[in-house]
Amino acid sequence: MAANKVSAVHQAFNKLFTTLTPDQVQNFHAFLQEATVSNTNAVSNTPAAMSSGNQQPAGLPNVTGAAPMAPPVPSNAVTRTSHSRGKRLRALGKLRPLNSFIAFRSFYSTAFPGLSQKIKSGVLRLLWTSDPFKAKWAILARAYSIIRDSHFDQVELESFLALIVPLIGIIAPSDYLRVMGLQLVVDMDKQFSITKTDHNIELTQEDLTTNLSVDDIVAHCYQSGYVTGIFSPNNSNQGFQSANYC
Image 1 (cartoon, one colour):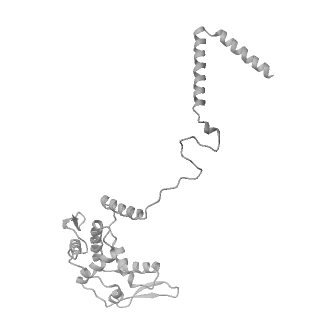
Image 2 (image 1 turned 30 degrees about the vertical axis):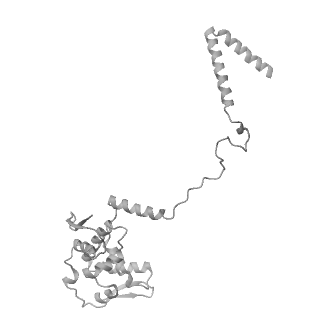
């Protein structure tokens, strides 16, 4: 059967060649020569070392199946990244203004040292709903945002409040419940709530408001040496006083 197949192929080729013109035969011959030369060059250019499965071409680095190891990360890389991100955020103006409640919560959290963070947060939110000093906290929060945006790596909310709270007139954490006539109570189910115990507490308008502006507080931060630089107030479009720094 194999001999018959070969004979049939030969007969087909012979019949093909008898139908070709002399030019077509010459072109076909040239094509066969080019194909032969191309195959010969491909074989001769293959490195001999490739014939062995355990060897690699000469001049190539020794490659194993293990994944490449990542370069060591410097110990201060995270710090540099954090600082760089902070600078980019300042440049792009993407730092969010401090929320007044966040400032309030940070300041009065020390009034409840025995409570868990979850319970403390709930209690402080209850106090915030009835706090009459929200106007002062709004000024504090705005001033802190301005100072923080220009001194990102130097300013912390805790130290800022310690400096400014006595200036603007905010009740100390240890005195807040007493001065406001409030009491923290807990029921049988260990649920905490705030109860008004003294209904005779009266706060004056002077207690509730302040003549200090955002610019006044920012300027005080510079004058007291809390931060350094040049302060230049300008009117903002949001009703607050803003500041430029050099």
